[in-house]
Length: 156
Image 1: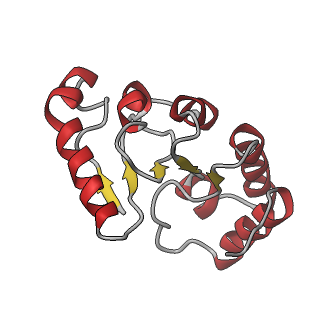
Image 2 (image 1 turned 180 degrees about the horizontal axis):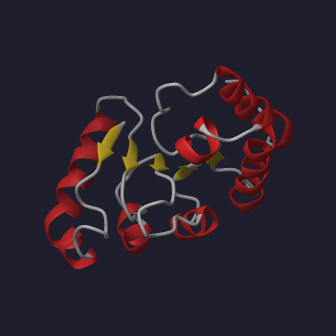
């Protein structure tokens, strides 16, 4: 997993991404795959305007952060733009929902994300950012239990 936090469309333009970053990232992920690893991109920032490039990077998974920096990450639109070429990881809010939420709000958010993005496969429920210090274990357990209840849990 590579974490990309300096080239979101909230920081640089899609044109700059295409001109300066797309080809080097594509080559990087190609080499990762050649080594027998599974290339996954964790993208911090606004990925929405550059999804057509992300789709062509040769990655197997895209993790996106939660919507909270004056842009919205719409999981259904992300999944649609990737055209089934890339598995989408959910972006459950780690502060407002997992750290400060209750059982009801966590379950509600999980159900909404699964409803929006899980149809047809290619979706993994996940948190959008690393867990915040002090996140209650009960909230993490509620998240996992909600995914198992409302999603399709398939052990490898």
